[in-house]
Amino acid sequence: MAPYEKAAVSAEPEELAALYRRAFADHGVRALWNMRPVDNPTPADALVITRALRTHGRMEGRRLAERIEELCRAHQ
Image (cartoon, rainbow, N blue to C red; front, side, top):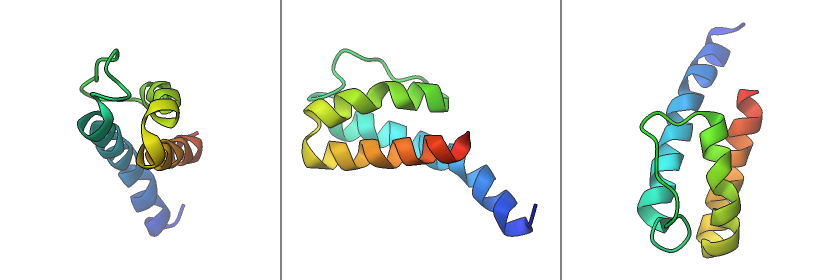
């Protein structure tokens, strides 16, 4: 694995956690009101919130859900 690939892989969990926290900060009241955030979200935790973001998070929530799903697929 090239050094730049290692950096990208190690940054993904941090970026995923940041997007997860942003989802609750920006869309918690509207879309995620019945969910509780976890301290260290896994890709599975992040995927759980994407349906609610797509359904109730308006266009911004949908875009955020798409980015979360993209990172989770890259993490597999």
